[in-house]
Image (cartoon, rainbow, N blue to C red; front, side):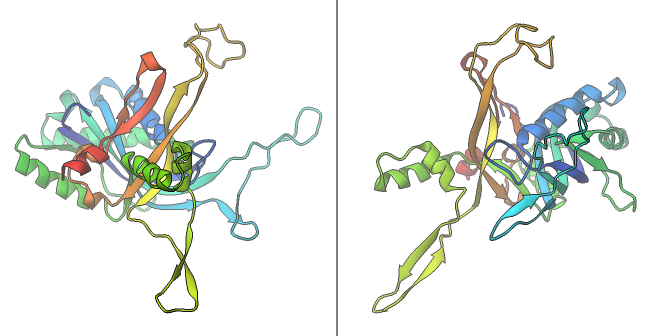
Length: 320
């Protein structure tokens, strides 16, 4: 992010039911970060003038999750699917597989605007009002449930100091409210590192081979000195890295609104795209030193037909 975040809005412990667990054609297990950025833009448009804030980035901390699936044979899982209504001719309609999950998450937004610089009471009123709007929205296709027991922590609009020492201390206090949990950040350098490891043994290995290598569970055979027998062990590497989608790349030129037949939106330019992939890492929030490492933001390159999200964890991590 080009600007240092000065104001952070935290929405703690949102209970989301039946969110989309299939994040792309090749990945599943947690919603794509584009779902949370899309939620941020929808919330931005929904707020009235009295509560309006400009949203610049979003971070998500997952406290717990429950994939809606059942065992389906050896080391396999099967999603719980809905029964679709019958068609007009009385036959069973086709089922488009949908992976669903329940999750308990906290959202952290980088915001700015006049409502960020009022008194503590005024900022708390804005945070509470935004929280009310959130509970009438959908997130990653799931429903945000209300707090029926009155135990959900209150949202808060934080204003961080200009002084660097106090700034870091305030962020440390904020991080404590996000524990226990894990946040998903972007760590693209490990993909290049894995590619170099593979090419040391196979010069023909490419980025796709390195990316798929993160999706596998590797078993290595080890033998001790002067031992007749060895043992199989699961390969262990530092960090909890996962393949993730980060946006879309253009496959066609941009078409004018209404030019493409059967497009759902006839008022917006249309373009055929494919998913872009990278490597994410699940990190405990207490390991982050600055808010920039937590936040995801839009980083498009329209001239190159790139529509993607970015996160500065790798940059911030390299400075420490």
